[in-house]
Image (cartoon, rainbow, N blue to C red):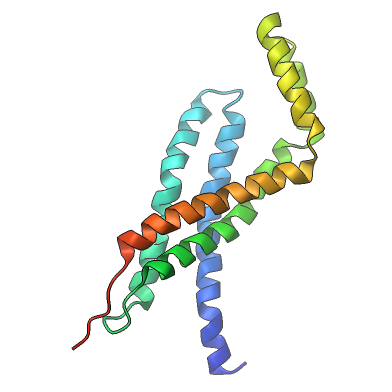
Length: 171
């Protein structure tokens, strides 16, 4: 592989590595959301994770900016947006793992059993909600749950890009 081809792969490797870091935060956050249905303590972890996701994206993009930006080239808003969005692309793939296990039919059956112990009025509404969940195909749930981090990546990327942009210094 030529030096020029290796230089083109460096940003992709960096984004993939940072995407795995962000994806682990997304996984923990989604796992806390799922476990928060049965254990209220995990709801607190979920809300902490919601704050930690944009902070992690900011810190990873800032580290990348410090690595690649020079006074002569600067770091544009679009570079920050692009890097943060691509982090969310890679991280969203990793975050699909807990989402997949959440929507597997065996888990939904366990939710049915748990809802049967609820009071009748509340249990009936939850049963209807669960029936509509079961009617939706698994791939559709996974696609929606993958698109949500992409949307967040676009929002956070715009904000991170604005916060981290640097104009080139001309002499």
